[in-house]
Length: 187
Image 1 (cartoon, helix red, strand yellow):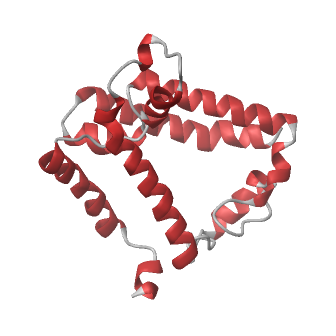
Image 2 (cartoon, rainbow, N blue to C red; image 1 turned 90 degrees about the horizontal axis):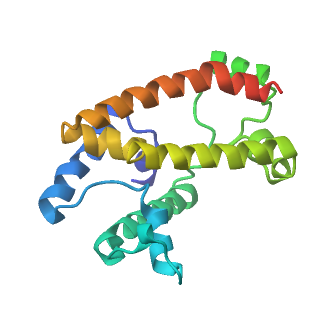
C-alpha cells in the first residue's frame, strides 16, 4: 500500500480528486476552497491593535486554518512515510536547462544551490526572496485570490474574473519561467 501511494499519480487520477473537493466543500459546509486568506486570518487572531481590514469574525473562516494545518501535516507525512523528498523524474532537456542556469545539485525537491540555507545570506537572494514574496502577496490580494482559489474554485463556479486571473497566471508563469527566471539566475 505504501509503495502504491508513494508513486506519482497520473493527472487523470489526481486532477479529478482535487476537483471533487469543490462540490464536497460546497455541499457539506457551503465553504469555498482557498488558502491565500490564511495570513489575514492569523493576523486577525493574533494582532492586539487591528486595522479595519482585520476586524471581522475570523471564526467563520477557521476551517481555512485547519486546511493549512492539514496541508502541512500531509506534506510532512508524505516526506517521512512516503519518501516524498526524492528527486522527481525530469527530462534530460530539463537537466541541461538547469545546468545552464548553474543549478548543478538537483537532488530532492529543492536544489540546495537555490534553496539551501547558505543561499539566504547573499544579498541578491534576500532581495529575490523578499521581492518575490511581496509580489506574490500583492498579486494574490489584487486578484482576490491565489492560483488554486481561482483555478479550482473560481472556474468551477464559472466566475469570469477567475478565468481572466487563470489566463493571467499562465501567461505570467510562461514569461517567468522562459524569460525572467533565466535572466535572474544569470545575474
